[in-house]
Length: 205
Image (cartoon, rainbow, N blue to C red; front, side, top):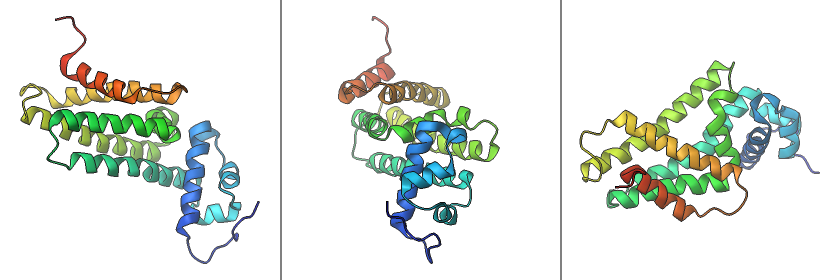
């Protein structure tokens, strides 16, 4: 297997991206504590010297990997939410559908995000980073709920923080299904169910 030079003169974006993708796969499969830099170097087809030149520690690599993978998700969700022409039902379903599609096609990233606070126990710096990441996604969800209140789809007295918790709980549960279940998912049907559950509940009225 061909490897690039152990001590590159400058960072090559393609090599850095390959390392980050390899880190996603290895960390996603083995978790932060069990994964090794040697395994990630092998998966990325680079020497350990090259890996450490790009990322001087496992902690820095994990941090960079999180921003790389989840930053892409955040960027795409922001693009959906920024479209002010979307009525609330389309906005909600568009965001939820994208969350589920991302989890189904990027299982390693989704698994890391869901399990981060527990799997990183003992590393306060990384836990703090993931707490900030969670808060950034909560802000996106808050904007959706605000739009729902403004357009009359949600109660005007709805407490924002508790509504965020309900939405996050539904998303986490269905994202977990996307990670655990290997068979094809009916993402459209699941998106519609989450929308109906969030707006109408499960009661027989």
